[in-house]
Image (tube, rainbow, N blue to C red):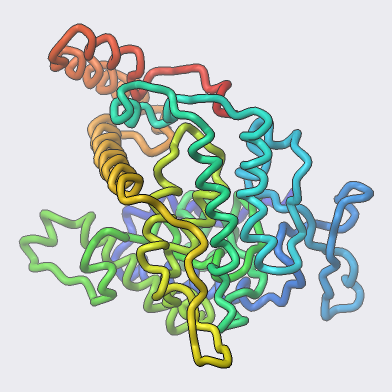
Length: 407
């Protein structure tokens, strides 16, 4: 095992000056440009050839240095979503994928196989969402219908007009400060947590890292240089920082990694990735998110699907899926409600002082725990009926609960 050199970026990230943060972002983009330039023969995950079990599917990786030729190969996809819980016991195609269509549908087919064998009604895993459904369990049949619709539209998500966007591309799966180590001069010395790293077609692999992106903010999405007056800079320092990181990551990508920038700027790039991610993710009682993406696709079909040439001129393939007006209205209502309660959940996390997975520094644990206890007590006291109070207590967002059914 290699000894990691340098300082963990997460320990110093919030103390860095604006200039230092821009330096780090530039170094990350430079490193990504080297990864994106690798010529890989298939999608899946990268292995030492000797480490794969006998009989495993693999595609050899040619190395310019003949001494290392044959040492590496592309084998099965190690993304966590492909193996979560009982999914690891199901025999499905996990790669390597020699064409973009296979990579695009493997996750959805895996989830169909899992739900067909093990699926049962579940409450939404995100417990604050349960009130949206009157605390009723949701049927996996609705999600199976959405997955079937996804398989029908998947071929049209491939950007055939630009072959570069379908190149198998290696990228770190979670490029956030705690996974980056730097020297005193802010040179990147190590990246950790590669264990679920996948090689995927570039149009599915592209995107601004979660720790740097600020989607949902008009200034960030306009890609204009963020500015605030001196008085507002003090009041909104975190907002300004998020806007700066988003802007400079995209700006440096345009300058140093044009292939990635082209993928980011491709028509409906975010929607293509959202559809892929939501169709591949383990089902946790959410029948709305993927369906909302599919509805948005149908509403923008003519702008997403490239025209095809024929004897009569150019025409677009008709959308192979459809929804009734009632289905669209109900899905949009539920999706808006889910987004609202997700924002409420984030507000609760902010009050307590925890991240998405609940981690806190050891020295802050007792203080954080007391804030969580108080938040629950305040919520129960504010309940307008005994029934509401009982439901809140039974489904409280930060209490332990049995997760067995979600695996």
